[in-house]
Length: 479
Ligand SMILES: [Zn+2]
Image (cartoon, rainbow, N blue to C red):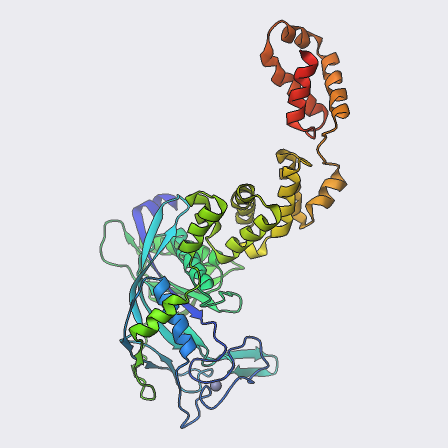
């Protein structure tokens, strides 16, 4: 496929639904609470009873504005709520309140770092407010419509079709997720569906300006699945174009067990939601005074944390960028430093050893088998010369595989560094006795042989001797 990938260009745009971290729903006072008993967080408004009137949740709007500020969007001083009409059993009103022609903000951007080290900026078309629908719960005795989620506040963040491959799409999503988490705008829990992504993908021959027919991938709930699904979809579409088969406008879903995308439904024409302005709500007014108040209490954003890490911990811009890529990662690093009291070593261990292994294992930082205090503990043991840096890597490997504490592993495997002069001298004597020719050469002036003796002593002690001490003692013995 790689040759064909050269011939084609993929065009990818992403739509993210992010649930806002409010206590109550978007248009009523019901609790916004995951996992509550079925149909306990409902009222006449969110169940669409005749005559019930919505009122806008001010906190939800504030959080939406935070997102708009963080994503460099132009904010409308007056935006309009609109009805998006469609029928579905979990939508008792027969419409969702959303925003259509006049969303509260537009024209934003987000800058992400790619694995090449290069930074790339992607456009954000718009963000609008929306309420979530309920959920159909299928059980053995039938289906229950759970309306606890009906009316929960969302923002939908729509990107420009600026991404060209799965990696760019994945990094866009991670950066967006990170900003929403840093801003306490959304908790980012993808398993609960609080941050979910639809991807629009089309392919065209390189140099062509017209877009190909796009296919929509729906509700993918992990970064890695998004990347895999996009890759699969790009190859599938290229294959079809190569065979002169028409690409049909479809909505597809990712089957993570089979590693393929599957057809959900054909989209013969765009949905007609018959949007019209919501008659029960006045326009949403965002005054400049309110905007200023929100700016004043904005939580620290990734860019600011990155600067702080450089100042506070003496990290390079690059390392600070890597370690602040997500709020969870930044927190992990800060906790490791708190324990180890060594910011540079902690940065190296987290950015290289830990992230490398997590990446290879397909895990995110919150799934790390090594906890931040355990890593801090390991670093203390290196700094105290209890173990060498080399042995520490072996210990870390075991920690990653088992989640056990470094102290237990070191004790059990007898990995403590030998810093006992007597023991090291005994090993040196052994090496000297076994290599008379090299000893004679060294004494005759071949001082380069020092490295040979050090190497032999390290071998003799199974790498556990303190290398600094070995160096010093070998010299003393031979001179
Ligand atoms: Zn309600």
